Image 1 (cartoon, rainbow, N blue to C red):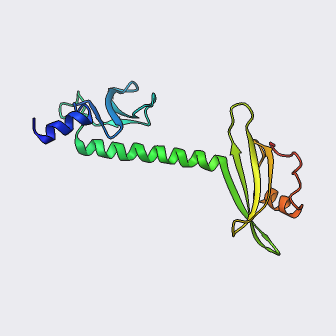
Image 2: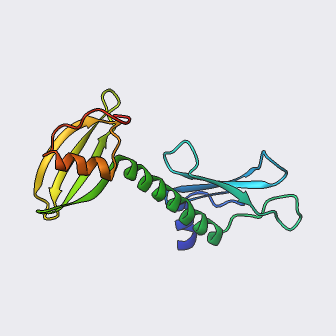
Image 3: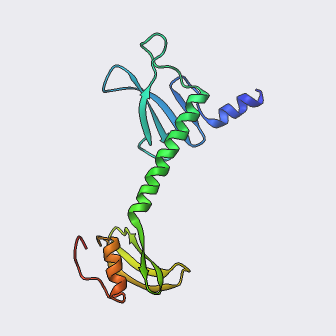
Length: 167
C-alpha cells in the first residue's frame, strides 16, 4: 500500500455518495422535496447536519454526481462558515454593549447574559475605555438593553434600573 492509499484509509471513506475527512462527513441523499439530490454536511459528533443543500445530477440525469475532493473541500468551507456565523450570532445575543458620552469621557456599558438552565441572569457593567470598571450589577436575563437605557443607568449613578420593557 502506498502513502496515498494509507492516508486515504486514515481519513475515512471516499465513496461516490459518502466522504469523511477532517472531522466532516458529506452524504449525498435523495431530496425528499423533489426528484433531485441533496448533500448533507455533518460535523463529527453532531446528530444534525450543519448544512443541507442541493446536489448536482450526474450526466445520466437520474443519479447524483459523485463527490470529489474539490466539491468536498468547498462543502467543508461552506459548512464551517455557517457554524461560525451561528456562533457569532449566539455570542451577539448574549453580549451587547454601547458607549455613553459623559463629561468625564466615554463609558462602555455592557450586558452579558448568563444562560443558566435553572436561573438565567445578566450582568450590566460600566467601564472606562481603559478597562477600569465603574459598576457591575445583576439584572434579569430578559433585561431590555438599549443605548437609551444604558445612558439612563450611567446618568443615575449606576442605580439598579427599574423594571421596564421585558426585564
